[in-house]
Length: 479
Image 1 (cartoon, rainbow, N blue to C red):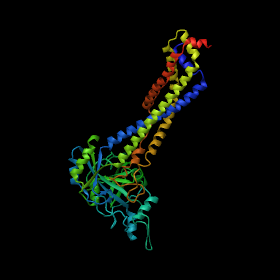
Image 2 (cartoon, rainbow, N blue to C red):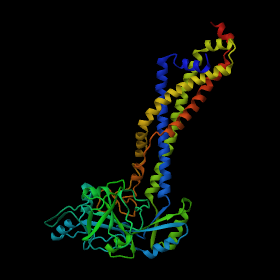
Image 3 (spheres, rainbow, N blue to C red):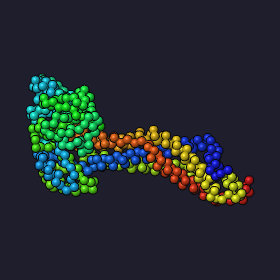
Image 4 (cartoon, rainbow, N blue to C red):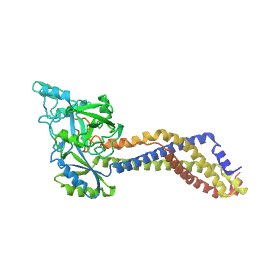
């Protein structure tokens, strides 16, 4: 009988014990494979983030951010200055607006309600970067309900509650409208267009627009449909998915169109600056700040991205440590079971050595037996990992995002942000983190099983070496 055949037969000599060992190994190996899948997925996500937005800097007016703060607006001249800074490969200007439903605005105007929270209302807040306070109205209805948080924020801004004997009505959330100079979102990433095409014509005459999927659904609009802003008709060129409910309650227009609507043709809300490589980000940031002036502009690298990458790195380290621990557990199980088998088969080993079997052959027999058990455990473990890897990765990511999600600093919103700033609808760390998906792909399984086999061989070598210490005469004398 060959060594291989004898090893396979020995593996199934005690079927109950073999089943128990395989079950325990399957759990350890399944966990190891799931952790490896999570590690690979997180590593790929970190690379994706670094490649897509890791080289992006955001420039806001000094003292202002989004629809908050003060300071002087950015200008197209500063955009040209930023484009000439060393290491800068692209600069995209944005102009951010807030749209109020026209019917609601008319009803409030008739009721004499002009609270400070009204977007662009008389005496209301202006847009970012010192944009005009003229009211911008649309026939679109916001896709996000105000809810408790939105109503609370509006009340704090004077848009709800009572004033004397007059009861003020609760207003719906405004809609984010962003003018852009290229097909990117406010974090510098390419827009995820799910239907239709991009804006194409980036001129003031353009009447194309991109709508968030939930906003389009709320208003029963699709590609080719029209809506109005300040009584001007705009055609839906495409629909995009920002990944969040708040982010999808938004409209993208061309930059010149948004500037014309705001009445500020040479002003920008923010600039998205792309650096040519990760290595040059710090140098470019310093050079940009010097070129634009610290009293004119604030140059920042998205804190949400840094938080997201930091959290993902933490998840990556945890998953790798867990993979090593699970792999070590599998190796320890194999080591203990093989030591037990060597002790049980001392007489058999003595007889084999007495009839001339070399230590190498006997040791190989135990190594192959360990590999048979590892193969069975790996097969079951791969099935476990295929079902569990996604859930385990989600749990790891969720446990590391409880303190990293951006705060709800949005305008009159419950949990949103403002375009171009930290916590914006497209820049939240939670969105970046929650988009991590892990699956036990064939490559991950193959790599994990190869590591398991390596550990199995190491675990089996120690017991195999013990066979060399067994002296046939002592074993046979004891029988």
